[in-house]
Length: 178
Image 1: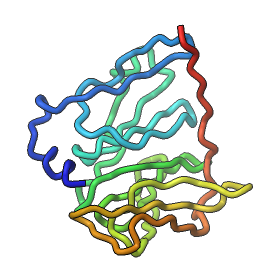
Image 2: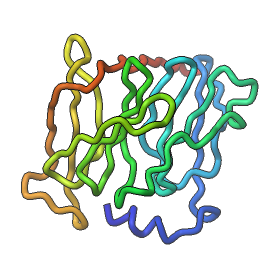
Image 3: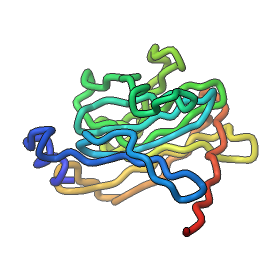
Image 4: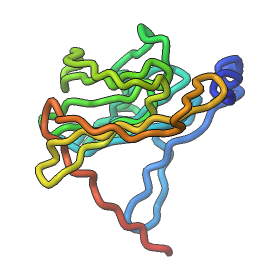
């Protein structure tokens, strides 16, 4: 991901992107207009939505039942203690959030209240995504990749381990054209 390194040098105002909420009727609402590198998104559980802004090294939390969704955004997790970028994420049934840390070779779990609860290492630095699977959602799948900054002779890999907590099924979405 050489582009990520270059993107870190761009001021936030120059690189801002948007996050949209698209309703079933096709209506699109901007819920964030200052994103640098938009990545993982998970939810809803307990009316909360989580979204990764990799370059800011933050996982945002949105309250889906708020009158103003954009105004409900708050920093849920600051990942700057890791020499890595937060990338993909998944939610467990208990509301914990699991984030792949690209460049650190680790997936980190945080409780719904924000306390760090676990780190799961993989043998490749570029951990890019994570998801729960298996019939009981009790398996954790971790995807890795390779690039110039984090070479890997195996290329991308998929690792599976017992999930520390059962997963939350990914919500299904269907957007109908207008």
